[in-house]
Structure formats: structure tokens, C-alpha cells
Length: 318
Ligand code: ZN
Image (cartoon, rainbow, N blue to C red; front, side, top):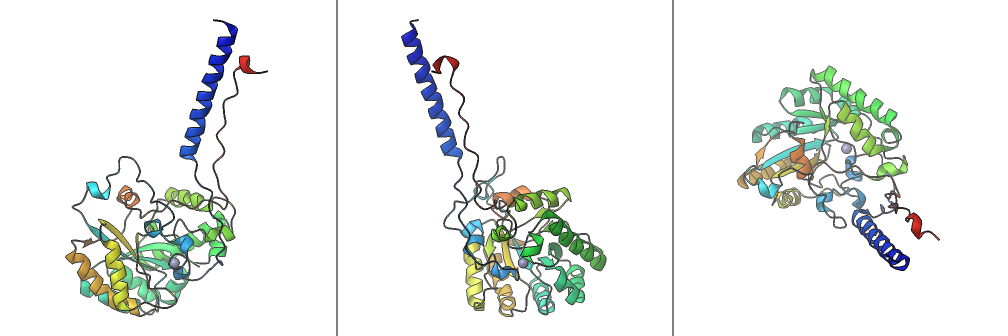
């Protein structure tokens, strides 16, 4: 083959290869994480995931498509017969816990409580009642202070283990589930940590034998202006439509209105074919497929490294 043709063929081959690489990069590139301007918060859950757009769970976000389910996990459409709802209550116990427990008993429903250590110290009897009545207790946070727990993994583990041990000593039951304050995809942590701490702590809790759970239905009852009972019912029921797995976020706080909504929510969901269970690590793939386990948020400004093009063949170098 003449040298001229050889050069032309080699050059066109390189162009095709470069085009393929650029196409692959375009397909796999992830948009840079948008800047966060919201003021940080360190108090109740309501301030982070419920009212801040950046912490709205993926199921209701309008600016991002829902994460694709992992491979080999049946989607809800493929498994339409089983409809399970999980009532979850964060940030308690509180002065309202006894009333909430009576309501749940009247409804014959077991729930999951992701408790806060400082609240459990203030209401130790309520913590024990939750366990004695057969509900599930999970770790939320001892302090629920974002600046502390998300500053580094040492702080997170100290806070986490303090609550884990306290729950065990108070109830005799070692927890094995947790929910991160603000949810796994919270971006508030970026005010206090520039690294991939959410991914790191997911790995840490998995290593400790815990499973984490977020939510795919939010009652929104903990907003600064508490919604009416009817609005809470409407929100929850409407979000549960077209779902077979509904993990519903409430807050066990002094906000009194939501407890009255629980019986109506339970009745309407039962009429829709839902059974009620408590969370456990027994079947995490199902929860991932349902969007209940959020993908850990990435550090601010995170972007994948650019694709590296193969060096040109020797004969094409000048
Ligand atoms: Zn919380």
C-alpha cells in the first residue's frame, strides 16, 4: 500500500476512534452539581429535606430524572401485586409520642422510628414504649447537628455510636437500620465538608451491618406553617398512588396536627391495597428500586474526570 493511502486510512481510523470516545464521554458525563446558596440549617429535619428544594427527595424533584433501578431488581411494574407502606417518624421521641403510639395501636399498625439521642434522653419512657409496643427503632442522630456530624467521619461515627449504644442500653434491642439527617442526598453537608462524606458514611454504616433508608413519600407536616390534617392526608395518599412500596416521612415532634391525620391515611392506603410493615435490612434491593435509598450526594463542584484520548499512533506524529 502506498504511503499516502496508508496515512489517510490511519488518520480516518483515528478520527473514528476519537469520535467513539467523545460519544462515550458524552453519554456518561454527569452534569456538574449545581451551586448551593441556601442557608445551612442544623436543627429539625423539616428545615432540610422538607422545605429545601436541594434536599427534596428524587421522587418529587422536577429537575432530575429518577435514578435507574440497579440491574436484576424487579421494578414495581414487574411486581404489581405486593403493596407495602412504611410509616416512619423522625426526630422523636417527643411529648406527642404517647398519643402517636395510642393512635398506631388503634390502627393496628407498626411503624419505624428514627430517633434523636437528645430527644430520647429527654423522653426515655417514650423510647422504651416505642420498643415495647413492637415498633422498630432506627438510628437517626444523637445531636442532629449538621455542622458536627457532617464535618468529618470521626464526628459522624461518634454521634452515631453514642445513639446506637443508648438505644441498646435503654431497650435491649440493637438497632440495625438508620436514616441520615437530611437524607442521603442532602447537600447541606457541603457547608461543612468538601469531600465525599455522604458516600463515605454510607460505606461505614454498611460495614457496621446497618442499612440506611430515605423516603419516597413526604407528608410535609413539619413545615414552618403546619398544614391542615386534610392536606396532610391528601399529600400522602396522592404520593402513594402508582407506588407498590411507600416509605412515608413524618416527624415525631410537638407539631400536633399530623397525629390526627394518621388514622385516615392508614384507612385510605388500606383501601388502596396497602399492607403496613416496619423497615428492616431484609430486602434492600426492593427499596433501591423504589427510590427509597437515595444516591449519596457528591461534593460541591464534583464532575467526572475528562475521558483520556489514546495517544496518536507513532506513524501519525509529525
Ligand atoms: Zn431529622
